[in-house]
Length: 148
Image 1 (cartoon, one colour):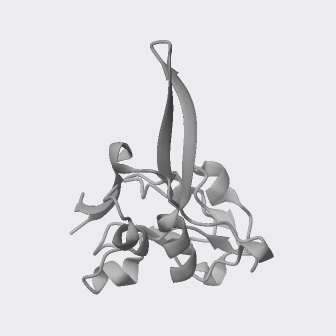
Image 2 (image 1 turned 90 degrees about the vertical axis):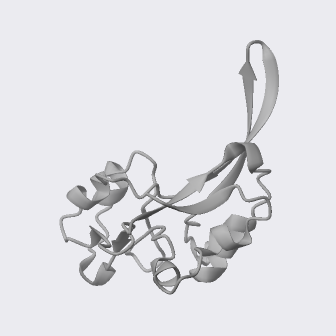
């Protein structure tokens, strides 16, 4: 069964709980320069001449035809056959950033280790019947794990 982490903007308040849970789950150290896999944003926009504030939570979209997979010369990225998430094994990662340049969402980034890092959907949690960390802590239900 394949899954997607879907985002519902009308329920998001950009509280950042998803980002903090992700950083905790993945031991992301921003002081070393590591980039969070998920980020919450507040944006201002105008619609029909009226000003609004919008909220957004973004991470890897786990694209069906993920361009990062094709771009990786080392074969580090692949689709998990059980969950459908775009996951990685950085054993052979050379830190070339090809995956990051190919991604239209800017999800893969080079970590302080010199190797690629990105959201992998908390693949091991999902396989164990749990929700990804970001979904589990979202207080307003703006993130949901759903069948693809």
